[in-house]
Image (tube, rainbow, N blue to C red; front, top):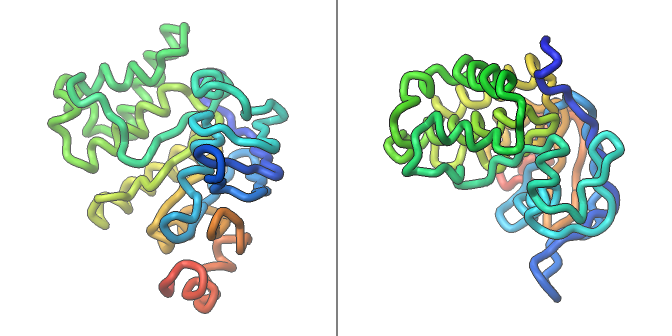
Length: 246
């Protein structure tokens, strides 16, 4: 592995609260530890606070408490400053620049980098993970299918060479076949780049199959945490907290 490639980082969150203004607190004192190089799934019903958690970690929403990446605080910083500390956030809805080409979208993901050779190497690696993007590099992002746009969004995040990758509902609107392929690639990225991953996902079965640990969020609080295999094996837990059997 080259020095330019990402190295996983440990995430430690304690007492995290966040919301959207006075009287609108969404997260209520969350504690979360994600080991270096681990994939961690955050599950739960709509409105539980999953997206707010990722937004707080990436600086989009103001959070209080403690959130550190390898001992460096993430809270109280603008999103660009959080990105400079190795955090890449792929938001729900993908957020691609539809009028720009695929390759220009990817290069936007490296906007804080100044190492030209490293950016070129990152682009090659993204095309290695997502060959379809290499084939469509000159097309506008708006001409891609939903699955291809999600691949582009993840690829753009990888251009940062992140130590921590935050994925918000990557399977949203995608077919089961495309979803499974996307998670296969995320697992490959985690293994080969040693990138730490926190994924928020409605497809509990696939998320638990991919992650080593999982946390179930309900009404802004973690109500269940443990190894993915343990949670998958307990059908009553899945029914109670996720709304359906796994």
